[in-house]
Amino acid sequence: MIIDPSDKNLFRRKQSPTAAKRIFREQADLIHQGWVKRLRELERLGGDQSTLAEHPDDWMQRHTYRLVKWLIARGHQGILAALVDEVETRHGSRNDISDQPFKQALLAMFWGYERRPGEPLLDRRRRSELGDAMAYARLHGVQSKHFCGFAKQAGLKRIAAKLKAGHREPGFKVA
Picture (cartoon, rainbow, N blue to C red):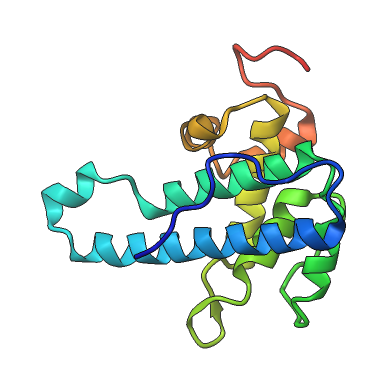
């Protein structure tokens, strides 16, 4: 049986970085396990059943976005640099991501898990797209439960350019 990640923010402002890293790792492992389990279940479902189920990628993205938002809200995003350093391998990032907590989290969470040797579950391009989408959603104050719809509506492939240009989606107030 796979346990789902917490639905409450487990991070506290006065936690030590060690405690925050432990909680982050535990929750990241639960997200990874839940994602892989859901991917396997989706493969087993028939055509009609699979269209009715939430896609495992959407589930993973929603939970990852929420976890990193919680980490940032409690002031612990500094642990992400240490987690990225622990990856201990060339992770394919050509750009500095030290000021991009969502990209750091995605790298720290998913680099070590591979479907086939040498092929990460999230390659550099996908980590970049999702990291940008999560940062863009946070700038817009998007709730976790609405993240996937927001990212799809905003255009996942266009979000990086929108971030760079300082674009705001219609209907969202400037923060």
